[in-house]
Length: 108
Image 1 (cartoon, rainbow, N blue to C red):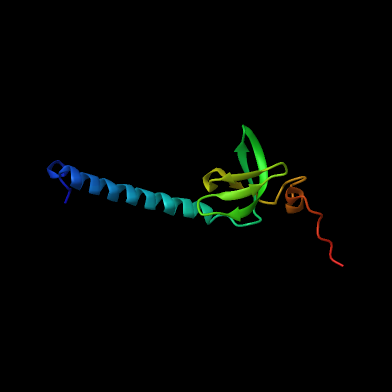
Image 2 (cartoon, rainbow, N blue to C red):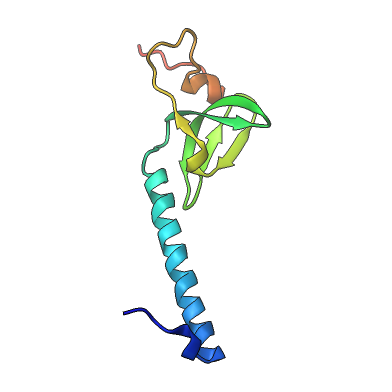
């Protein structure tokens, strides 16, 4: 049964507004969490930064965003704007060592 808000006084309308806003924020947090769940530390990602395509490595999964290290800088980005890069079909793909500036681990 629909609620007739015309019969509500100001205090009741404000209380209803707080409930609606809380519910909207809840749905946004679910959507953000679903985006975050697609990524983990070490994933190679791409995104548009300053009008150009940028590649990097996820270094941290935060509460609402991801920390991404590129060859030149660090970014904090909402996961909605990231694309995971698969390893297949790339000539000279960046490695974790390239991004983090470390020497590759050589066993033995």
